Image: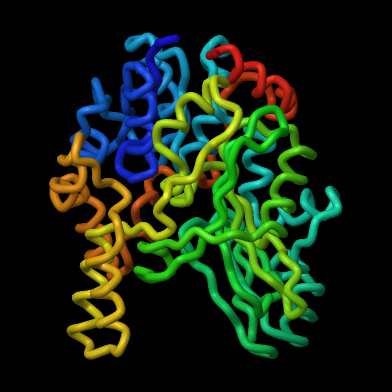
Length: 400
């Protein structure tokens, strides 16, 4: 079985894993990316790159040109990578016969919303922290009683997230930028990445950050956490999920795992799967995803920058960062495909420049132009509610 896959973002290392996997499986790989140069474009696994306007310049224009790229290059399957998945989920409204590895947009956006996700998980009988809309009486009472987290309803990469001490005043609500207030859980924090088909988990990675650039991890460690895996398997089954889905999770004071938010897409945990298994699992040829032998991975250039900064500031952590830098495998490195890692300072320059201009870490601006935003009408076509979860599963299966 061969075909053409269109991957909808090329700037991130997890997109590179997807491209390499499909190329190794004999598929032609086309990448749609707003940046003229990007990480995946340097890879010998990619046949063609297509320049796209970012969704931030207009949702409709983005979808129309994405549909044109699908038709022009004869894509048999569209695979979103990161925050653009919320936009790509609407593509079946424009191209109903093209399989997209995404659930219906109504469900995708509900899970992406920090408040609605908590309601969905609670309805499924799963543990989540108490969460209320910013500006509500319940949120104010919870903030007076204990430590809380305030976060935009559609935030990503930690943007706009604040942890407040008990009694500390909450920010004023903003109707144009809705936010939620969530009870802070004191235990260990983990992240996950899962690929599922029709409500069955094909593979899950639980991992934690071991080095950070701002609020975003740049070095990761895979761990075993059966309780977290069971939580994920249950919600995947309840939702009948097909595609990637990821969670940020925390333990409470008694060690019980709670999911604090959902990312209905991939995360950096994807790097811990065997790259060769990803495409066959998406296409229904494999029923399980194996883990790579490495339990620690890093994004070399980000870790190098953070190591240099910590040394310059005279921090004690600098020596440990240096040891990790020298001993940990980079997520993008492949002897058969070396250019993505070697050319990353060039291909990632637009993101680096924007991060320097805003004086924030790389990871916090990497997807600003492709993330979901409110304030614009949804694309014309069937309503989000009209597409049932089973429809997304059948569309994905059609590619196999």
